[in-house]
Image 1 (cartoon, rainbow, N blue to C red):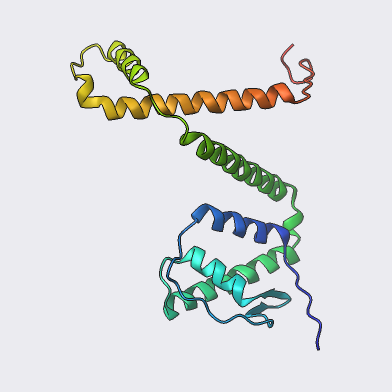
Image 2: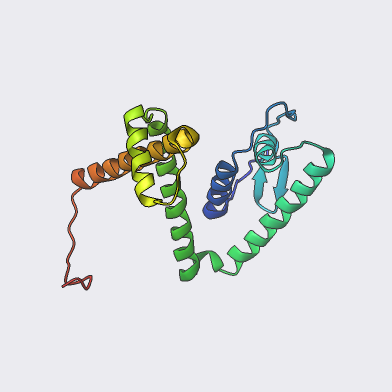
Length: 193
């Protein structure tokens, strides 16, 4: 049996996974195509299995039709060809490109970690009646001309108090990360002295 080599540029695959995770479209009820050990798509030395194709397609498209699959396939092939050409030209090792990739990677990872933390905190942060009333008094001080009674804006106040509590929980969490870390800053070197 012929041995196949799977060659993938790390960044495009990683970026595609991040994009797919960010989209997080549900694909409930969509049919899956049969899987095979043979590649479903091959573009020069790049290979993609049927399972990978279906996963990416279902993340990309909310509807499953032959026309949508054809459009996705054509875009996939064009992307892979362009990425292979960029790599051939050495653009994947360009300093500015790598700096951009690093920035994108950091921002994506930051968004993911904060989102995960907020999800874990969100369910446990409920506004108490006393906190809602205190939030209402604060809101009245910030909006002296408003005469809306608390009964009219209770839901908004509860939402606002809950968001403030979540924000404080996030600040406490990042503060704990700072406390647990070994951090040294040469203030003179960074222009602070």
